[in-house]
Image (tube, rainbow, N blue to C red; front, side):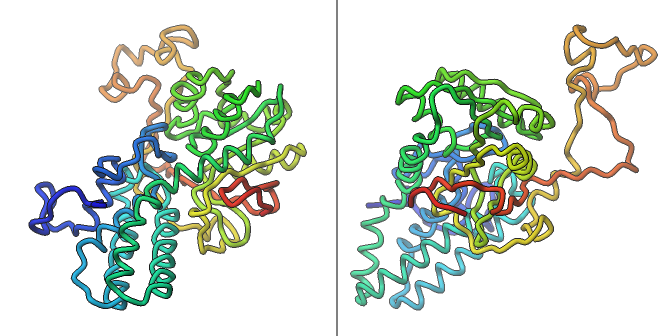
Length: 373
């Protein structure tokens, strides 16, 4: 099976002549244009809400398969060095703030987990098949298994988790997660009637977008609330289900900002807090607090705007009073109604992820089964 469907006649690309081939592969798979192995239905949390994007670990694995197809190494040690170098290049690319949009605002943690998983598979395969050429043929022939890994994992998670959603219950979730949406939609398709309350998911409104583009179309009664209303609505829900960017070694999770606060509120009100995540997101990290998290999206701090969505102009004159501003208005206000202009003396902090300790998590829904943290 051929995974890299375009010809490599040089190490150049029209848009970037110095970009390594492994990064070109990663870009193609992240954008869902990876040719034969592109899995159109495989998506993850993204800054655009519910855009179709390859899961980071799957994109990393596919890119490493392309390295194997191009390799000129004749020994396993040489190939492992190539794969290690390619993995490091992808992680460097993922950690670069300028590439945050390509990753959809997602953490590089899942990408690192995918690289590590594939490297372990290569080592195990070589131990089973010491002949180098036979081993490579086996890895390439099984490549489609990695292409389907995310979809198969989501299906198993949906099957395991739907039993926890009781008829007539109300589920609270946060932002957009392909795993969580698959679980909830699967439960609804099996005839379970329940309601969803979803946080808007600032700063990218991913929760509101998921409500509009996914849950409403699935026919599930859905209510969108402000992120700041999480404690207020917690007493109305029966459970909380969230996804994860990564499941760390101490049983906690790293996920979209606001997850930690949601977990604290759930614990205080004795609501079960469930996490749905694929096993390939298990990360070799051991954070003890928020400062131990990898730095993600620092450059976005300077580009975060605050908008008064309840002002007169933003609501079309329904709420508030018109601010004539002396009859003057600048271009920024015209293009972004309700924009709050901050003076340069005011700093903005915009973390994308937070760490939720294991003590706040009830159960993990994974493709390996239902686990305790």
